[in-house]
Amino acid sequence: MAEIGIGIVGGGYMGKAHSAAFASVGTVFETNLKPRLEMICGASPESSERYAKAYGFQRAARNWQELVADDAVEAVVIASPQDTHLEIAKAALALGKPVMCEKPMGLTAAQSREMVDAAEAAGVANMVAYNYIRTPATQFARQLIADGRLGRITWFRCELTEDFHGDPAGEVEAAWRCSGDANGCLGDMMPHAINCAHGLMGPIAELSAMMETVHPEINGTPVTNDDHLQMMVRFENGCMGHITSSRVATGRKMGYAYEICGTKGALRFDQEDQNALWFYDAADEPSQRGFKQILTGPYHPDFKPFCLGAGHGTGYQDQIIIEAKDFLQAIETGNPVWPTFAEGLAVQEVITAIRASDAARAWVKVSDHST
Image 1 (tube, rainbow, N blue to C red):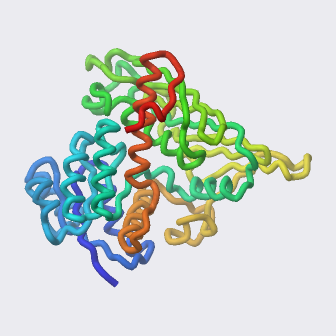
Image 2 (image 1 turned 90 degrees about the vertical axis):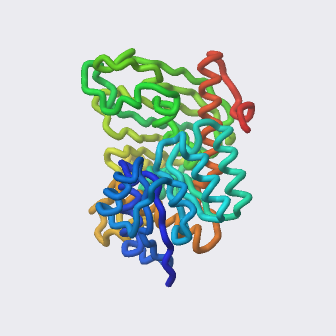
Image 3 (image 1 turned 180 degrees about the horizontal axis):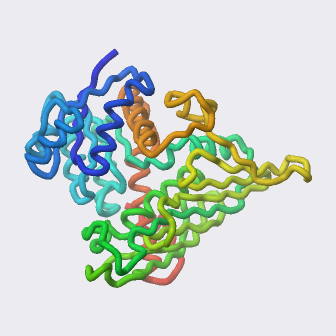
């Protein structure tokens, strides 16, 4: 059994989540690689020291360059702002260190392409931290689809809806969200919905999208990016669908939800009830047909290590622990674990196509916006 030194860049919301995940993943999943919280880097030397003490790291870094270059840091997790991802990832990969990067990867598809190229040249494990696709319920949904339980898929609907910008007179949760393409709904939230679509349905071939800023200001703070968007899509497998995202959806707190219809059955899921998957089986007797609730339990993917009791449930932090397990597995075995940097690039290419479609008010092919 070997140890591996983990370095995390960023100590805020996601930095804390990844720190907690790597502190516990070896116990939860009894991994062969045991993470050691070696070094953390915040926005300043002072915050780095504070995070190191609070989260249990061996040392604090004065800057990310020091963390990446340190010999005891054998794998790097990037949980810093999106405009820092490219430089940090390239530096770590150049040293042959595996990298897990928060979503979305780069500020642009071109930056994401650079990260993919760097990862391929390094030949080491790389992952993008799309956590919601990893719930036991959604992993099981992917199994049901792959096993043909839904038959030929005929329709897909997905949303990621929240309401933290829903009240124009309310408090600004974070002023940085109000400006910059990367911080709008498309840059910040829609990537999760696109990743969900890719995970369940495969690549998107073409789309028609519209974006909108609903509130020009939030309690006096100007809003210069998008509040919500919607798009019609056609997948490469021929299926059509609809994907939407909003940060002004009053009442919605974590509306990562999807519905999939096929010739033999259908599925429904909502992240606000993440331990339940609803399944309709057209093979049931007519008198018994209807959506049935499946409560996740130890027979579903990645549930048993957390709890032996069906229906007891997993939570948000558990998704991050599953991510950590997958990253360690990719490092140990040398086999990629999806979603890799290639998926991060694919998501960014869809985002580029969405902007182009909105600007032209027309259908566009995603392949026309690939790098």
